[in-house]
Image (cartoon, rainbow, N blue to C red; front, side):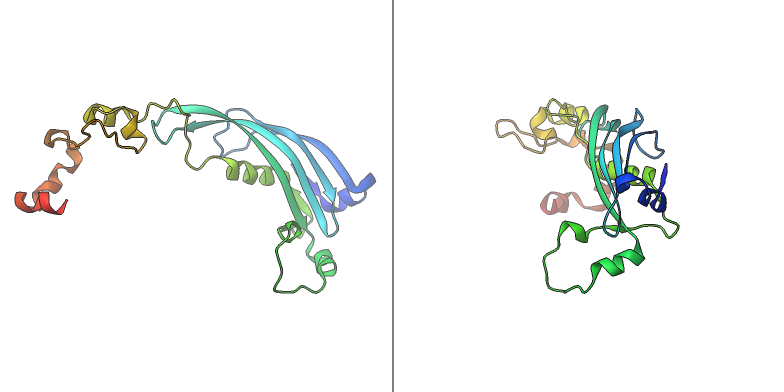
Length: 191
């Protein structure tokens, strides 16, 4: 979906309200991204604002199981026309506090703004970097079986009541060849 800056300027009040409903490739969205957005003319360009919602299918970083997470994203993006912004900005000082109006992107030269790209970027930035399925997450079952500890070890906290050291037989078979690099007398001292 694209909106033309020139077409937006001639609309009454320079404003266009529209419903967004698209499936965007490259996201882990199970449902289409839906929401109500507003495109309006600003002093030196255009503003896109509104809220979009979707349902994501993510994998928990702790237990590695898939789970669903609802996501609601508020969008408030400012795009400026380079020619009009030069007239609007005037003389700038270097030493001043940054304001909300100082953060913007430039409109493409043809004046067509791709709304789908704006929504894609907003949803991508709002997607959790380290997904976590919740407080009831069981953690890594393999680690619990080898240590005999429960969720205390899987959450990164070592229990004080139990011994959580791994015995010689519980070493991951992929790492066993590394033991041959060190003599037995040094391996205990350096690790």
